[in-house]
Length: 441
Image 1 (cartoon, rainbow, N blue to C red):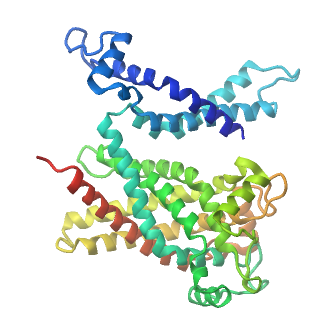
Image 2: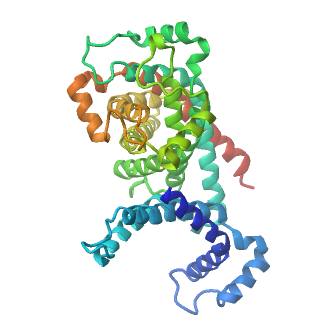
């Protein structure tokens, strides 16, 4: 609750201070890398800048960048003030006498500020960039989100089957639990037989919201950074380390934003008839009711329960997917393997990406599913796992290496087509956007 309170307070202030932010940005960019007297002075001073902006671009120009600015305020100050208040409430910034310790308070403030600054960096870039760059960035976010939604509609049944297989035999050795789902194909049959054909699309609505928010952020940032050439080396080739860094950072942000939807999606997909139920059964009647139930019992923090367990999965998955796709596509383009068959080029690149992501990500995916789906007590603490490390250790001791690769086949069966469709939709939408909105005269 501390995070939300701090963020909303900053948003309220942001409405009034945004015009000052616009003026500050214009003055800071004026005469960039030029000595005084060698550039045209459009903004003579603080007050003249207000007049010049309003005259040239209209009064509404004083609120340019308002949307990303408010998101920036929400996340920066939500994280910054939230962490500080959280630490203060627990006495972490106090000395033995119960008084505020300057050193401890400073340390907490620095950590909170760094965390907030890291999370909001993309929004600050959008705020300070040019207007056309802002709309280009927003378009990239939308295109990435829509592409993922299109792929998510097709791949959702595979997500349902994967979730069931990953929860089956939770913290039990092989042979010590009832096997409801023998394999990938049998799981489809059992789900349809026990819950009906529509059960293959359980969790579809929150799943699509998750796809839109997570991949809109992830693919949008990746595309935006790629367009600016920040991932290439001196030769114009994709830098592996830079690409991994960008994709992991973008994935972290996307996962955090979309986490509540993924949690509800997991709860709904795990729900099954009693005869074939696996994992904890949350008994939600739908997405809206699920959010209300979680909020009523655990407040706003409860909506982000399990997000820490999702971060490693997102980083590993996104890095392996985006990097393998870009690298493979670049190699195929360079050797002109499928010069006259671009769709086949996308297919091969995406399927290779699916292999890498399945191998590296499945263990983290299992842990994430378990963390999101486990039952919690009245204080929001998990019944089975204390944290991500505890989850890894318990799975290893109880289920061995096999436990980390439960659902591997449906994971690739989902990720392969999903990756193909997502990147094909993404590329198609990018070309469509370029053809219709960026035609040169």
